[in-house]
Length: 97
Image 1 (cartoon, rainbow, N blue to C red):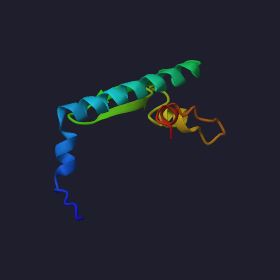
Image 2: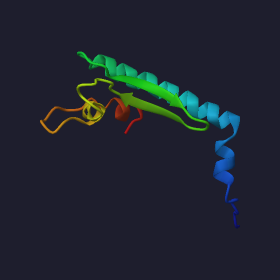
Image 3: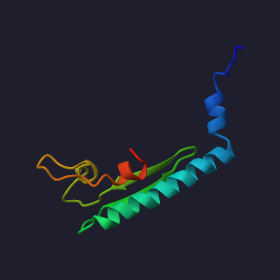
């Protein structure tokens, strides 16, 4: 039995309102988990978990707007730093990675 998948099938499915809503709902759930992980490990700072929505996709983002630390701060919070400080893995844990 042969199955033919139209070349634009993924794009068509991804743009369905129900699919967009389902992706947004899962992103919101995972963002809540990531916020909990971040809050239980916070001592101080500007870091926060943000939920951003595009036309189709939703994004869960760890941001740190500390002007003194610069953009690498969020990466160090998630993954650790070169000095041996371990990261908290808020996003990794929220998505089971």
